[in-house]
Length: 461
Image (cartoon, rainbow, N blue to C red; front, side, top):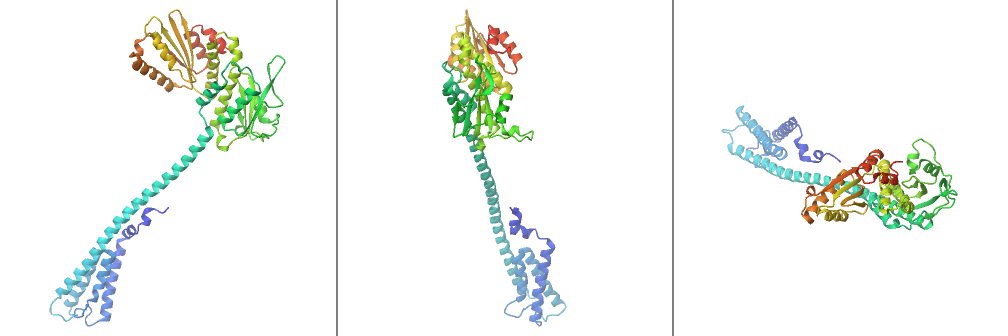
């Protein structure tokens, strides 16, 4: 696009050098006088004629350059007339004042006319230039908005759902005690959830073979337990599958090409289903998915969901081994939260609340905490005589999220019961999950029978 100043013709006139205007003014004045002398040498100023033709020079200059240059041109003509009279080139008794005044008046009118219309046109041009600038800004902003909208559509289409939504949906579908191991029905349900949340087009779930003692091996079953889409026969010797089983992590064709190897694979990615006890249950192979969905954020979501799915497959066995069902659920989810923190940098907080049951406001406070429980939160209520302890696992919660949780608790206490948290016999002990050692120490120091919880959750291992 051309600069605005190049499109403004008035600005181009203004930018002309001063000597050019003076030169043209002098040239036009000299030509008009020369033509007058050539046409009528006896009366070159046409004083005795019906029309003063030397007037054309100052009028043309005034119309072209305005009042000032037209007036200077008029003065030059009158100066030439005065010099002619002084040198007696003209036979006149007195100076023709009427002629001079008329010539000056017409020149001034022509110059002023030009200046007035020039100012009007300039204002209109400036208004037009301003509107052109705003139009250009609007056009650029429109295209930026359109591009942003298209990218937002692709991101929404690629991500589909949030991690919190996915985990809540998994718990609602597969959290019953009837889920015991992996079979064809459960495998199809797991794969359907992965297809929905990952926008997969062609995917297959292969279970891991087990030995005579029901211990998993490193070999996949020959036939898949579940399919989605019209998938072709998957070669179990595919290098991407072997690399997935070996590394026990999600692998895709993108990071596998960094070492410049030629991976002869028909797959886009492989996702292992590994529970919190580090048992590999199955591998999900992805053959086809939309290009805008095949991105790191979406694959990371699928890897996290796969780990939680694997935990649910092992829930029945864990609950059967532990008499306290709430404690078993807390142990499983705590171990998974720590795994997600170390593997995917997903924050979580373990909050321990000690409440003195002798206080009259203790029970309303406990009920309020239970009402504040969110969909993914795990809450265990333990009681020992008149002492209460609430153990709350807050997944997907960082320091700002914990501050928001604390502020909601303070506001609800104030609005519902007219109480201040600082006045209650309550002690809040939050612990953001960072590493195994610190979490192990916190559990043993703050939680009743913390050694038992650490043993069940595998933290000591």
